[in-house]
Image (tube, rainbow, N blue to C red; front, side, top):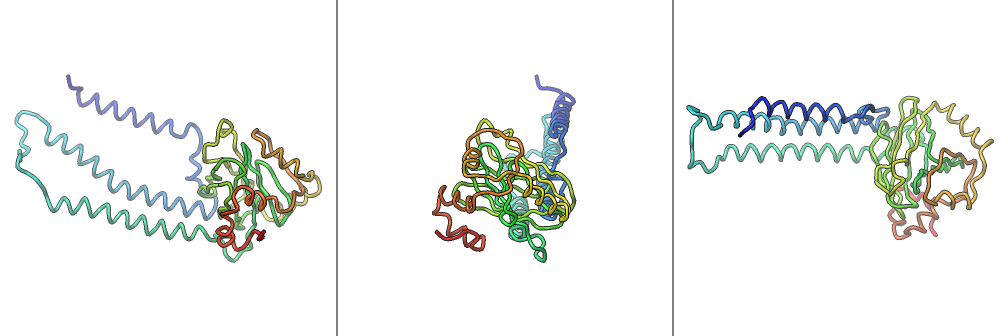
Amino acid sequence: MRPSWWKLAFTLAAGAGISLLTSGCGEEIRVFQPAGPVARSELELIWLQMGLTAVVILPVILLLAWIVIRYRNKPGNPAPYQPEFAESRTLEIIWWAIPIVIVGILGTVTWHKTYALAQSPSPSKEPLKIEVMSLNWKWLFFYPDQKIATVNYAEIPTDRPVEFLLTANAPMNAFWVPNLGGMQYTMPGMVTALWLQADKAGEYYGHGGNFTGPGFAQMQFRVVAKPQSDFDAWVRQVVNSAPDMTQADYDKLTQPGHLGELSFSSYPEGIFEKTVMDEGGMYMEHDRAMLGNMMPHS
C-alpha cells in the first residue's frame, strides 16, 4: 500500500526540521560571525556559492513536485501521453547552459578571492609574524620578532595583519580559527602561509581541522585579539615572567599528550626552521620562494 501524500509530506518536513534544529547543537555557526576582513571575504564567497546552488536546487525541487503531481497515475488525468518523445533541444541547452554559467562564475570569483587572500589584508600596515607548529595533540606558537613562544593559545593585536607560517612535527593537521578565516594545512617538511586579521578585540576559538588520532578532539587553542598597546604589555609580561624554553622542553612538547596553556620567554634559535628541514628538506626551496627567503640556507 502506498503511503498517503500527507504522511509523506509530514515525514519530510519533520526530518528537515530535526536536521535544522540539531545542526548547531547550541553553538553559534562561527563562520557566519566574521571578525575580520579575511573572514568577511570568505563569507561573501559562501553566500555566493549558496545562492548559485539555490538557482539549481530550488527549480529542480519545484519541477520534481510539479511532475509528480502533473503526471501521477490518476483516472482522468489530462497530462499528455507521449511515448515517442525522445529529446528536446531547448531543454538540453537550458540544463547544460545553466551549470556552465554557474561554474564559470564560481571559478572566476573563487580564483580572484583566493589570490587576494594569499596577500596581506592590510598592505599598508606592518604585519605580525607568528610561526605555528602542530604537535600531538597541542599547538605551539613562536613569535620570531618578540622571541617568545606559547602553547595552545596565541595573542594578536587588533587592526593589524598577522602572517601565520605553518608546519607540523606530527601527522598533517589543519589550522582553523573560524571567526577570522578559513583553514590552512600544516604538513611535516613544508611551510604554508595564512593571513588573518581581527578587527575587534575578543577571544576566538581555534581547532585542528584534520583528524590526527585519539587526542584530536582536545586539540584546541585560543586566539586573543587586543589593542596594540595591550599586546605589547602582554609581550613584556611574558618576557619578564615566563620561563625559557630549552631543547628538552621542546622535545617534551613533541611527545603525544595533552597540555594546558603555557608561555615561554625565549626558545632555541632556529628551532622552527630546523624542524622543517628535519621533517623533509626537499620542500625547502619551494618554501623559500613562497615566503620570501624566510628560512636560512643550510
